[in-house]
Image 1: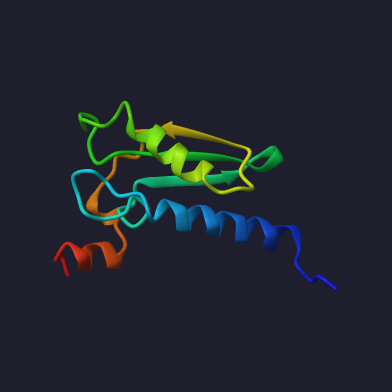
Image 2: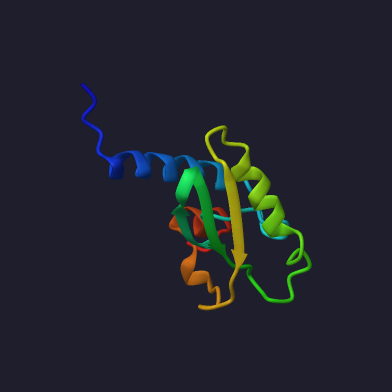
Length: 110
């Protein structure tokens, strides 16, 4: 008997997305985009689609045009994902406060 609820399954799927996002690194800072705090929202949509709101460290970031596609392709590598939509957002603005302790430690900020 399977005791998993739909919420449990959704959480496991989102955890898999987070694991993939942790393999994508900011091109200018040697930290993955999840621990850097660039991912604002991950939603599981209909038919196993993934909706992601992310930001960049600065609006003038040189990869602003291409990086959302990099993130999209990484998440599409999960075999159960049917579609990925990455929305680049600027509100709230990214600050170093969004970084995890692991990211701060890796960058020598702790």
